Image (cartoon, rainbow, N blue to C red):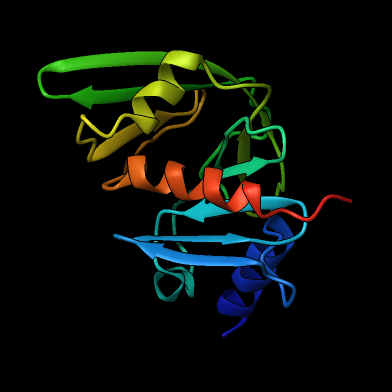
Length: 171
């Protein structure tokens, strides 16, 4: 029970989807929500994130419309100091690799976020409705494990994030 409460608390602290939520959509396995200042998509249904250990990929966007990736992993799975993420996207036989600056966040739950804008080619690939992406490999240098996230429907998720951002309240 404690694991569930701690993880839910973490999700609420990371996300702006609170009682004043202005946007909530489900797309494939994704849940997309928005509050006053930010919109976020989580690659798992909330019911699967109730218990640790769990790996979750968040894609978030604020009114600047620059997507940020955030990886949440179980305690001890990621190194304390992080300066980059290696993201591999496989599209058919082609593998595209992106080295993205990153920074560690919440130490207790091992949160790693991209720092600064994502590469434009990567954002274009995520947004491209002509391509079907199913998995993204995310490697944290210094970590013993590589994490593969299911991202089926991510192109529609990015469209929902742009729609959500249009609804953000200007503060």
